[in-house]
Image (cartoon, rainbow over all chains, first blue to last red; front, side, top):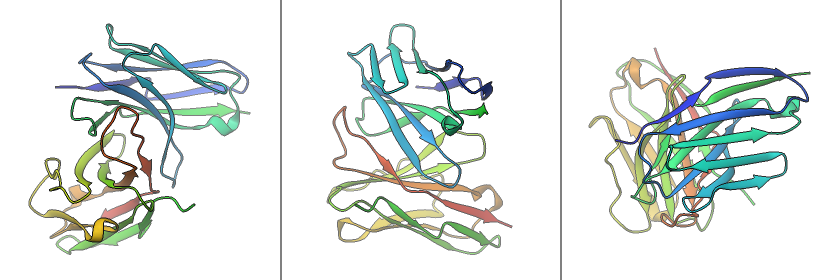
Length: 112
Length: 116
């Protein structure tokens, strides 16, 4: 059974720092891995999607990597800003092609 | 264009009452998903609709939960005889199609259900 774990559950860093969020999964047979952002009172927003054949994806200050063999993904945020404060969730797409398996998220606080 | 719309945004109900949660997906999206997010937990899949196909109800936690999607658009999630453990945020998402490794789901803001 696929399980997705995100560590740490919460992280607080000063503005301007580079940081890494971690996501691990137990079954390497995935189709893709996605990182989402969740703001209080708002829905989830897809940030990056990495196909199983890819190693990384970049969007602006965000870079997500995928190592299927070790069951790990990282989300790197460069030059963090207070507006980056949110909960970040990762999810893997298993063989059903539509059912995502979710981590519990990392709550990120960027201090001005 | 309009995103996924959910109503109500908040719902407080008494134990034993029935509740209906509504989701209006993005126009043209054929796939619709319901999830439940309990405090400090990841999203839990509830049900999936794709076009005119039979829905995947494998995630519904009990027979008190049901959902329908009328005309391939608006969906309603119904919880009968609510229990305190039903308290959670219920999220709806839609996607252009239900399959494909590049299929991205677009989420509504959710309905926060509190059962007293």
